[in-house]
Image (cartoon, rainbow, N blue to C red; front, top):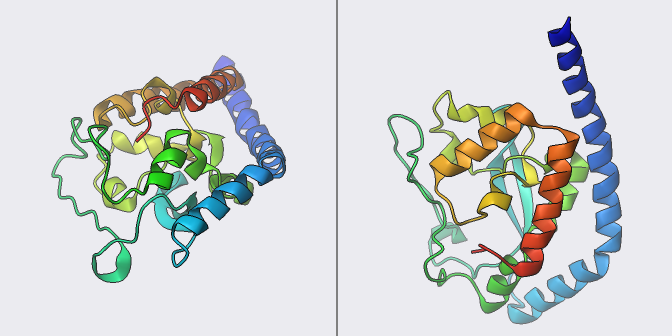
Length: 217
């Protein structure tokens, strides 16, 4: 009986969370619209010939791909097709020591404007539209690119059992400054213990991190 009550409680949490996500994301878009306009204008002035919004395929709930929105922070790639490719080949899942972004030095493809908006996570603001669409939640594991998730082991796929989030337990415990193994520990812990209390704690910690610009790349 207790297990049934817990499962019903978890179901109600997920159902209500979608409604809360939708409402808060809409409020966020309205309240932050002046910041959206300023960031878009600065990016356009910095590189008039390039698009303001960067769209990329990420892996979402139950391994389903979706298009994520971000303010563009990188210069146009010199590679054919204008996109930087990531190709991996791992036999037993993504290695624990794998790091997608290095916090040592700045990527030469990141513009000065891009470095600033990344530092304070302003590049992530358009993902509020992903939350409204239902692709993402406000809180959950950060979505990876398919080039990485295609190599997940069965244990690592636990990250895909919930919607990816605008922020997550791993991000507030290290942001970009952690390897894949450390990130999996935090994301697995979130999936197994997700609750309103934990979500609120993550949001508060996220706000503090953004204000301080801590551990951003």
